[in-house]
Length: 332
Image: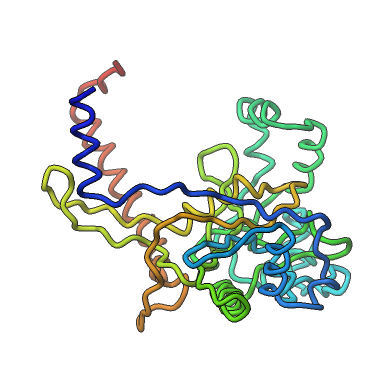
């Protein structure tokens, strides 16, 4: 025990005192509608919610909000019946079994980078068995799969977004919800409104849900932020043994989005926001070279180049591996 205490004492002398971090859900009694959202701003709304819940807001708190709720206050909801699909949208919709009006909205949001044949992939016997194992309603899963036959992936806000992040379900009747045009500006506006109304300086993060490549399930990530440095800047620092470390650039805003996502949920939880208290973070740093999510985004064209170089290098690895004429070591 004494030996363990020595480690703990040394750590407490070098580092800051550890504080408890709390994630407080902001649950709503009723869902927000476009009509209601038009009567006030997002900042005013959150102040009212916090007052009703008896939650005090303090400096350095972090408000994490789903993009869908922000979109409602930004006026980014649209009636699907009002969308007139172009010829391109009608042709693509026919070949990929999607509503041409949905295709039209996806195209307006950005260029489609690739298309996932979701139904064909999901019908793999082992994967399908897993999907049903994790399903709360197997029949509902089957019905949903018939709707989501193909997924169009669009690159936006430094993320690969399924169907451009447009929410065709779980939206008010007859509406679909688009992502905020500029989530960082929306986050900044909410932050400034809260500061004006309360005098408290907080950070705001806007989230969306994306699929996890190669894993079952999805993950909440950040698509916008304000008042917080989105990434830690520790690359090159010496590690515990004095060696320079290439890593250390942790995506703070994605980690917080993931924490909040576990509390907010994606179905009928009616919790579109959380307030995180007790977290130590670096404030946002002004940058003349990058704006918003550009700071953490890959430069244009680098993704394609990286994929190509990775493919060639991996091919070269397999060629060299083959000519070693030796089996791969067994797992121990």
